[in-house]
Amino acid sequence: MSNEQSERPATLEEMYKNQGRELWALFYAHCSDPERAQDALQESFLRLQAHKGEPIRDPRAWLLRVGRNWLRDVARRKSSSTKPSDRLDDMAGKRSIDPSSQLVGSEMKQHVRDALGELKPEDREVLVLRYAIGWSSNRIAETLQSTAAAVDMRLSRARRRLATILEESGFRNGHI
Amino acid sequence: MDTSSNKKNKFSEADVDSLLTNFFLDEVPVEFREEPTTAVASSSANSTRTAWAVMATTAAALMFAVIVFQSTGSTPQGGHDGHSMANTSLIPADTVTPVTDRIQTEEGTVEMKTWLTKEQDTESGTDLTGIHFELEFDLEPDTVDPDEEEANDDSSSRLKDHEDSTIAPDVE
Image 1 (cartoon, rainbow over the protein chains, first blue to last red):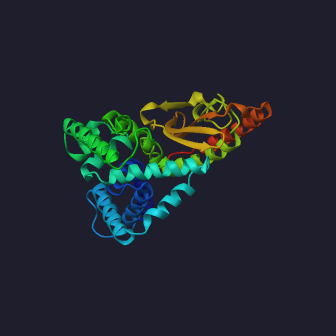
Image 2 (image 1 turned 30 degrees about the vertical axis):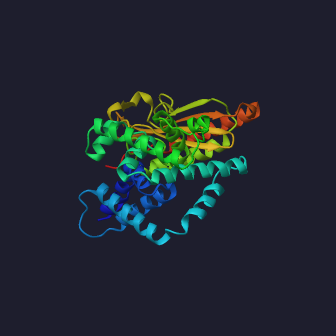
Image 3 (image 1 turned 135 degrees about the vertical axis):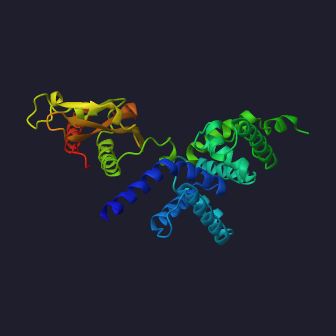
C-alpha cells in the first residue's frame, strides 16, 4: 500500500517532466497567454493527482482535455478584465532595463499574441509547436496525426496569414 | 501613396519566421525552454538542483570555467570506505541522460548538467547510484577576482562532499 502511494507522485513528476512542455505549448496555442497556459498545466496535474475514479487510460489526453476545459472556464469568467492587468503584470515581472523600452516591448508582444489569437486554432497550434518548443515537422505530424508534408503546408499558410494580420493591424516590420 | 512605408509594412514568410523565433524566446517559461531528457529519480534531482543553485550564487564571479565532478572517481583507489575504483565497475547501459538547467543571475548565465549512473561494488555486489554534476559559468568578465576564485575552490570541495554523501545503495 505504501509502495503504491510513494510511486504515484514519482510517476506524476515524470509525466510533468516529459510532457509538461508539450502540454504547455498546446495550452498556449489555446489561449495565447504564457502564464495562463502554465496555470492550466498546473491545474490539470493537480486534478490528475486528486483523481480517485476509474484508472485513466490515456493521461496525456486527459490532461489536455482538463486543461483546455479549465482555460475555457477562465476565459468565460475573465473575458473583460484580464488584458490590462496582464500587461501590467507582464511589465512588473520583467527585468528593469528601461521602463519606456519595456513598455514598447510589452506592447509589441501583446500585438503578436493578439495576431496569433486571430489565427485558426490548427494554424496557431503548428506555429506554437514549431516556434515555442522547436519541434520538427515530423514530430508535429506525429502529435497531430498528420504528415510532415501537411504540417509544412500548414506552417507556410499560417505564417502567410499571420503576416497579413500583422500588416492589416499596422504592426511594422522589424518591431521585434 | 507612400510606397516606401507600404513596403516597410510588408511581411514575408521569412520575416514572420524571424519574428516568431524572437518572440518565443521570452514567451516560453524558463523550465520549458529546453527539451526534457529522460526522467531522473525525483528526490536526487531536486536535492541536486538545490545544491547547485547555492553553488551558482557562491561562485558567480568565475568566468567561463567548467567544473566537472564525477562521483565515481571521487574516492581514491584503495579508499577506507571500501568503494574504491578498483572495486567498482560502471554500467554504462544504466547511465541516465543528463538533465540540463540554466540559472540567469545578474552576472550572467550558469548552466548545470546532472546525470546519474549505476555502479556496482564488485566485492559485495551492492548497487550504487552515482550523481554527476557539470557546471558551466558564462559570466561578465569584469567580475574576475583571484580571491573569489579561491572562495570558489572552497565551495567546489563542499559540493564534492555533498556529492559523495549522496552515493547510496539502490532500493530494490
